[in-house]
Image 1 (cartoon, helix red, strand yellow):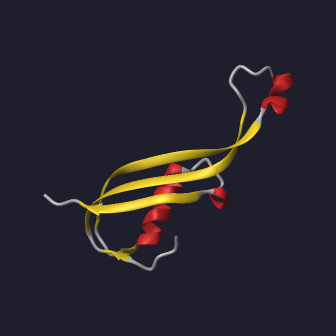
Image 2 (tube, rainbow, N blue to C red; image 1 turned 90 degrees about the vertical axis):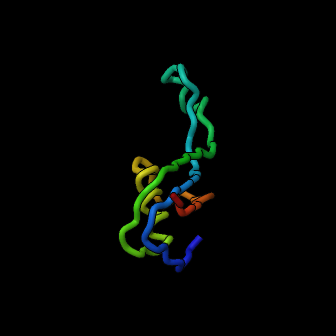
Length: 91
């Protein structure tokens, strides 16, 4: 989702959704059975909030900033952004 769009200073709401492959092991699985009980799945994470932007910045850099925060414990090479919306706050 590369974009050269520049976001101007102001107050914004953001809405972020990402997904990444993961291995799921059902809770309470005895250690001896964990490998057999595990399976591949896709995990999703969501983040949203509001922020003030003081300087113009590339939309991609903003998105990456929020992905870094939401996925600090995940290898960013496997993360896919499925939604990143910015809405200017008026009032």
